[in-house]
Image (tube, rainbow, N blue to C red):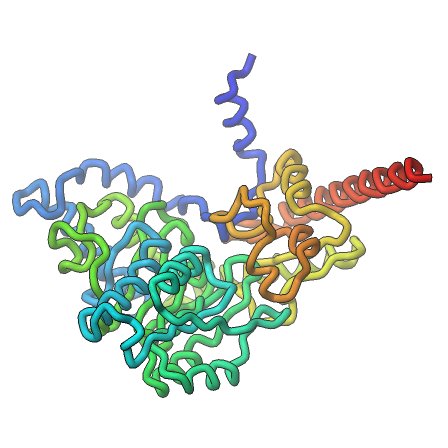
Length: 423
């Protein structure tokens, strides 16, 4: 008889199909043998003896590789535990730096406004709430059903002195891409600095922070086929920041704590792979070809499902989106029921952001773009990856149609039984 552990392992076995790459990505196959070699580098990178030199070299190389990938100096990179810490560090670290200049009484600051959107990741929205509770003025940009903001509205808001604008590069649920370069130009012209959450963009879009002009940018390793527990924050040279974690002098005094050598070296390995793929456009491993492949799968999936199943709306379908993401509003179904049934069928998908799973409330992102509560609770997110195939998509389409039809039939039968009880 299989134990619960064995049963759980079988549920996650090779027969399953993974379409939840926006939550996390599988480790790149090339990374597996490299990780084995890293296990011997267990020394403390801060130690000056031989056991510390190997890890220190790995972290230095990782920093250089990551900086090259996003187009900046290695001195402008702070390594973190992931995207959430990077986002917290950027926003809290910036405003703590303002205190050292203007004092603790925020009401007396010449610029005490932060502008953001309601489509941001929870690590931004919760941080913004934290700062607002401590006296910061927060203004949210409105977004339309297409998941995009209005630059004219930003121009108006920037007429009031603003300290920081924080807008994500690409949304993790509906995939819409924001015009960060234009946002930065407008914000800088008004005297505001700019932070962008680039976690969902890396590995799907070519990212160059110098070209975008931003002052801060957050990234995470496990969203681009590397290990969890490693992320990065880009901080433009001479941009203010106060460390949130105090202790040793790691990260040039900007983030204390003994470094996660294994995860950071893996991040650097994937950064080099991504950087090489960006440059070698002729390679089948190029980022351009991988992105085109995911986009073709996504577009094929959306066309087929709308053709074969009634009552399906693609959220932000006509907007510029990251190539792998499809957010579906499937009428007369419940998103959680869909997810559970598809899981039983062998497909891993989600109803929204993984960080909000288990929350009975509908997705704030879907509500922000104008969906009703019932519509938001009838949505499903499908996010493809580099290894996704047409055969997997075809099998998923068949299962999704079958599950939706079954759930709709059960819903109708329940509604009819209630009518009979009343009559």
